[in-house]
Image 1 (spheres, one colour):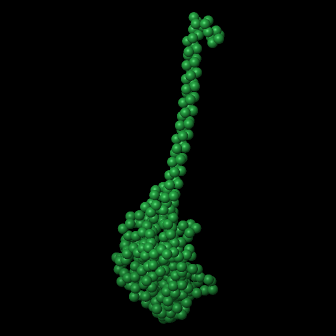
Image 2 (cartoon, rainbow, N blue to C red; image 1 turned 30 degrees about the horizontal axis):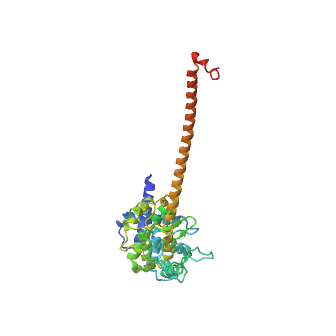
Image 3 (cartoon, rainbow, N blue to C red; image 1 turned 120 degrees about the vertical axis):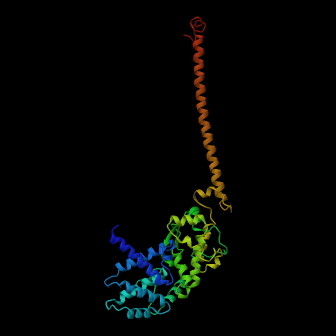
Length: 367
C-alpha cells in the first residue's frame, strides 16, 4: 500500500470519527477504537465518500462546512428544516455553496445521525422506508410521525399471544427453520420479513441506539422507540448465548459486546408496541416443527411428534426392506451354490460308479 493511500484511508477514518463525535460530543476517541464501532465507522466512511463524489453539478461543501451542517442539525432537531438551512447559510462564508448543496448535506447529516434514509420532498412517490423532510417540519416531528404512521398491525393478523417462546432467537430460526439475515443500516427497515425467501432484515447499529438512549435529551429518536429497538435485538440476539455469539462472529457483526445495555431480554409481546406484530410472526414460526435434519430429533414440546414418528417409521420400514432384500439375495445365492454342489456330487458319484470293473453293471449311466 502506498503512502498516499495510507494517508487517504487515515484521513477518511479521522473524518468518520469526527462526524460521530459531533453527533455525540461526549464520545471519546478511545471509545471509537472498540469493536462495537467497527460497522458504524465503516458506514459513515462510505456515506461521506458518496457525499463527496455524488454531489451533482454543485460544488461539494468543504470539510469545515460539513461539520457546521452536522453541528446545526444536531443542535436544532426541534426547529423547522427551513430555519436550519437559513442558519447554516449564515454560518457558511463560502458564497459558492448552493442551497441545493446545503440541502443535500442536511439530509445526509440527519440520515447519518439517525441511520435513516432522509430526503427532501419531490414529485416522486417515496418508498416505504424513506422519510421526506418538509420545509416547515422539524426533524424530531418527522421521525415521530414516520414511526407512528408505520406502527401498523401484522398483515398475517393478530393472535392472543402474550408470552413469546424463549427459543425465539435468530440463531434458532436459522438452524431449525432455514431463515437468513439481511443486515441493514436503516432503522426503518428493521425486522422487515421476506416470507418468500425466509429472510429477516435486521438493523446492525445497536451502538447507535445505545448512544441515542444515553443522550436522550437530544430528543430526536423517541425514547420508547429506542428502548424497544434495543429490546428487539436483545430478544433475537441474547447475550451470554453461545449460538448467538457464534452467529454474529460469522457475520462480522460486533454488537454482542454491548450485552443487554442495562435492559433485560423481554418475552412479553405487549412490550413491543411498534415491532410486536413482526415479532409475533416470527414467534408463530416456532409453532411449526423444525425442518431439515432437525426434524429427526424430538423437541422438548413434542410439536414435531408426527414428523418424528413418520420419519422413523418410514426409516424402519426402509431398513427392513433392505434387510429382506439382502436376505433374499443371499438365499438365492445359497440355493445356486447348493445346486452346483449337488451337480458336482452327482458327477463324482457317477465317476466312481463307472470305473472299468463296474461300468458293465450300469450300462444306462456308463455308456
